[in-house]
Image (cartoon, rainbow, N blue to C red; front, side):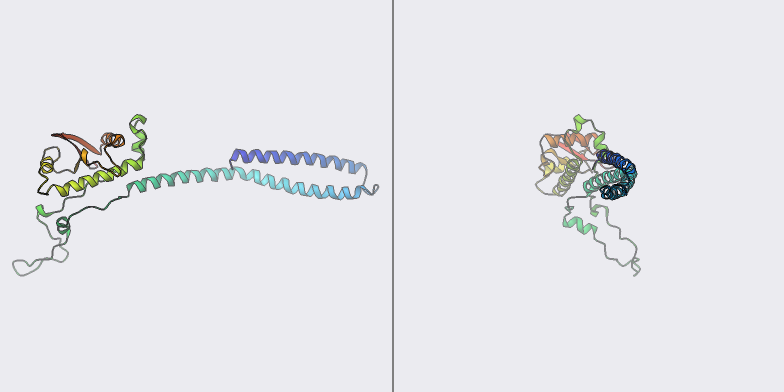
Length: 258
């Protein structure tokens, strides 16, 4: 119940009891004018009045206690609402930062990440057990695409015109999709029939970076529609991606935290 409504109800109840008390006081005056011992019919009224007086006093005491407890209850309610808001913000923040995909690494990449068995040295000895094996540079697995999610504060900092109806969940889900597109392109670059993709990957703006093409935007969260274009605008503004055009391809490059 709202604090103001609770206070109003208590005030009404107290006013009602005060009226009853005034009536009882008038009866007491009448009783004193005509003692119960002199009028037999007033004996029962006298007993009833005394009982009512005791009950009303008990009710007044309880109401006073409840009235004094209202400020404390209001403070508890305010504290609970603040805690609820904090927990809701934490829930949104944590859920939006949980990856919703598994990295798509091929067998060659996985083999690059496996530990290398110790080899014998030229003098017959072996490498120390705790000494990490150094892999050749060309065989090391390429890092996964960056998952640089946005925060609620960053989204709120945008103008309402730019933000539109986008939510934190939609934008961060789109970041997951972008990483998936970029990871898929990383795997496809080495395919024999993907020369055009390899040519894009070796151009100066894109070389060594994770990227995806506008034509890759096929969902589930990021599609080539008005919402998808709005998300790309927001992510460019917040420094999550950069955009370049190579030939007839529109290329989005995933940026890493500074």
